[in-house]
Length: 241
Image (cartoon, rainbow, N blue to C red):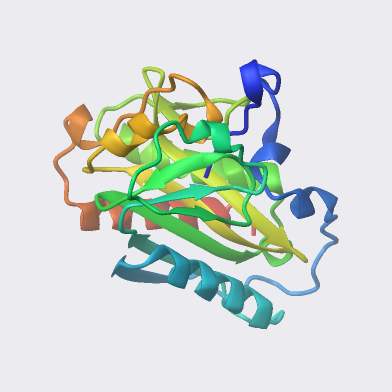
């Protein structure tokens, strides 16, 4: 769930493909003969270990068939840094007791912790009739629409996928795409300890500020916001099916 930027900014301005695992950029998605059987199944999993969840996503994707129903997993993680395939160690500024997990999405380093909604989208992209750019837009717009419901104006950035409020990042994203199936997704800061972000260059960007819903005056519970986010994601996907 990161944005990739190289040393001294030499990679600034890289496009979407750097936020998705390289394998995704090599996969051309032909039309699928299968129609979307129904809306994704939504699971609310609570606070769950990162490694266990990542292993479960990989296993689900490896085992799925053309008839497997898509799923959205809503959850929170204990304090964890995750570093994408292209991640540079220099973006971890101050190593701490928080574990760093090197994973298979694109991008650089980010932080997950309690009070942050993580939405993992396990989708058959061919069946959804959606490409990488469109899926990124769906995820970003789901957060933007949610914030708009509370009177908060948020924007995305073509050069740095994610959602921003007054220049500070409130949602990050990253994907792994394999043989037309995707997993990973987005993280949305709600009511968390933001201090661990000080130990990294968030998403590979030096000095990037982060914010969260509670700091913007949103008092809705994390469960309410999860439900709204899931609804927005499903509506966005349905527009492509």
